[in-house]
Image (tube, rainbow, N blue to C red; front, side, top):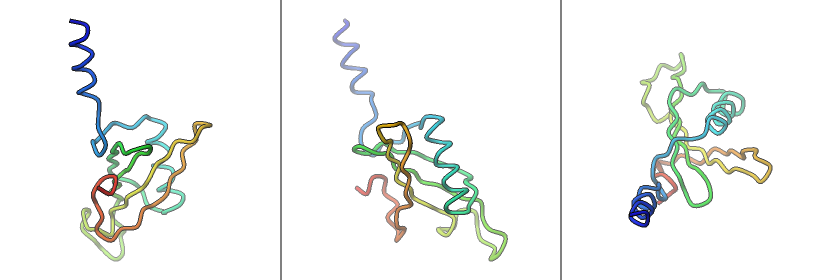
Amino acid sequence: MLVGLGVVYYLMLPGIGDEVRASDRMHDAVYDYMLTKEKRTPKELTFYKCDGFHWARVWAEPRAYPPSNPYDDVNKYRVSVNQQADGAFQISTLPGGGNDIPCGK
């Protein structure tokens, strides 16, 4: 019985490329990064588990000028999030170019 529960638990763990809920610290770090480095206000953040890091898709609030649809590519960002040994997060914007596949699969 216990072994069966262990197997079920293992099979339910997120795999590479699966959407995950980020910790509050990671979420706040990416939000702050977008405000300070990219000068955009995040509207929607989606995190994915990758091999050794997290990948996030960020939809930013549309800018007033030039007007754009909220889901235009100009409002979409992809960021890589690495947690360092001291607990801090190293965040970098990934190049766009239509590569919207989590973890670059």
